Image (cartoon, rainbow, N blue to C red; front, side):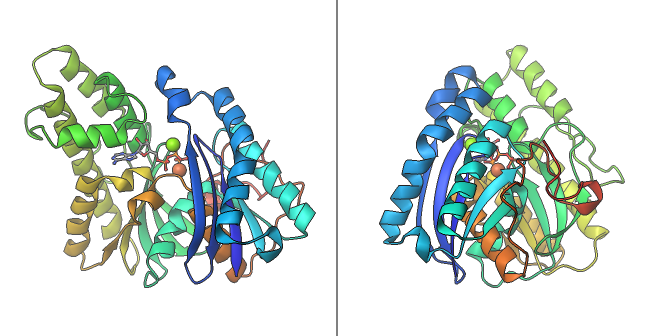
Length: 342
Ligand code: ATP
Ligand code: MG
Ligand code: FE
């Protein structure tokens, strides 16, 4: 089975061709870092226009590279939310047009489901159910991934996402956007114990996250002028890791049996966080897995893969009138009927 995947929910425009035996035949990503970096964050209108200009040529490129045509594809999968609505609409409308023109099924993918299933694209041994720490630019959640389309949310953030905290720390330190990789790099030169920073919610009973107080403390530490930027970056990363480990430990302690501890989303690219989680998994006698770095940050291979997983699990194609959804939680309790939304 072969699926074309399309991703356009934030600031990467991406297309990929993936097979059900986990081969990425071709993929292409156009990042908009240059467009957005002068503003220190993603500007929705600029993002939507950039997706609209770049998506069709990218799809053409991956098809040619793989030596395939739309006729060879078994489905067209595209992110239908959550994300910046203008960008999501560009990808979804493009997918609808391609599905209609080629008479192939449309698979509307929740971007978070793309992140949640991405570890299974890289690791054929990973079985349901698994405990997932989903840490990205807009989300910080612990989920029990019980099957395709079956996600139990155990914890979420009460304020900022973890990637957001990295991005804000980078902004405070003048490291530009996106900030995660820059903070990680600078942290290698700093002392992780140098700056006293809070660990919000650590030891609290519910496994939820909070990073707003940590970000404010980073700002104060920077403004007082007593610490080097590298020490601030290293101390921030350590505080964030301590929070992640404590909260995930709490969640795992109360969770039904799982086959593995898994991390996905952009922040999963962070080596310090990966190493910390690997140690935590060992405490629970669980294997740890996280996708290779290019599959952590936004990409279209994970969207194609989620489409393949949905096809294989017997989910029906989505209707062409399906609407893009700026908000779309993964867990059913919080989720209105599929296809609702703006
Ligand atoms: P969401 O998936 O929640 O809709 P998004 O798609 O914008 O948000 P991703 O692309 O999954 O987010 O992840 C981007 C985030 O990951 C950014 O906040 C970025 O700073 C962070 N990030 C990327 N690489 C690293 C790294 N090496 N260390 C820490 N954070 C990182
Ligand atoms: Mg991005
Ligand atoms: Fe993402």
